[in-house]
Image 1: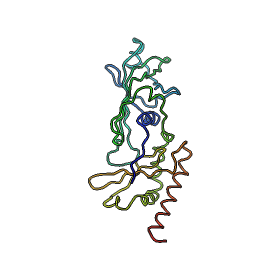
Image 2: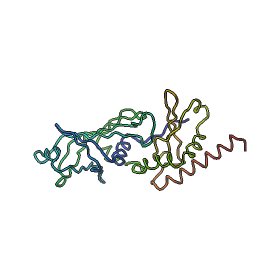
Image 3: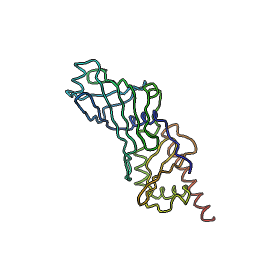
Length: 229
């Protein structure tokens, strides 16, 4: 199988922020878990809504700039061995942007991903990157595929060369982005990830369904060819 085609580290960092429902904010002497309280604006700035009375909010009232670190852990939405797919750390300073809003002035961000390795990204590169078009839909798409269409996963596995499937105990979709679907092949003591690429990278989330239908059509053709019909 060819190697997995991946977004850049900067794109992955933007995607994680777009997809995450929560993050952890560290300021001097305090840690705060923010749930549903962040977004990235059109200029690439991370905007945070701070809880009233929180240490972070009180620090911002007393100081103009507060050193801050944001952490995100990306966990696969499907049940697989080794569910942590990547970790991201965003370092910089938070500044006032309204009563309880703060903006992170990014200094640099670090992505730790088993496929990309550990990569540092400068603020300018982060600001100009774009999140994956499936950032907000990936979890629902993977859970739907696994829960409602397990037969589709069996069909898709026919696109994987047979010699990669020797000893496989379970196949679970673990990633989906504009490039394709990544299936995790679980063996007794190890796993391997294999990408089934789309015919062309997605431009919008609406293109995901027809691209998946194309993959399934290819899988059905592959099945017929293997059976000699």
